[in-house]
Amino acid sequence: MKKPSKTRAKPRGSGRLNVNGAKKGLNVKDLRNGMKRVSIEAKVIEKGNPREVMSRYKDETYRVADAVIADETGSIKLTLWNEQIDQVNVDDTVKIENGYVTSFKGEIQLNVGKFGKLTVE
Image (tube, rainbow, N blue to C red; front, top):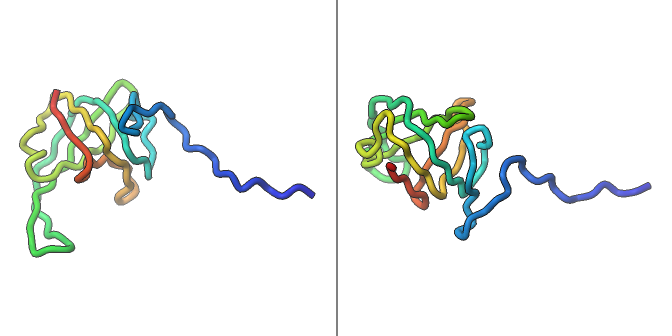
């Protein structure tokens, strides 16, 4: 009897990488929980009010707000922190480089993180 292969299935979506190793040319519909090094461009269609949260690690307070970005294939929640909140407005086109996707309360969301970059086009 043949032993099952121990190779893992490759994640679905675009396998194209840019020079920094980030997945490029992704659409919102391609985003899956756990994806890293995500680069995407989309339009801001909603922006929530900022709220304050306490750091888990330091005695500091941060501002956080949720926005929704969309392209022709779908929409996803984008988490904005501190100065990012003031940079982004509804109808702006944003470009996320080296972002990552997580799931929070059963909903996937895109995060810029400390190693990512958010630019408003």
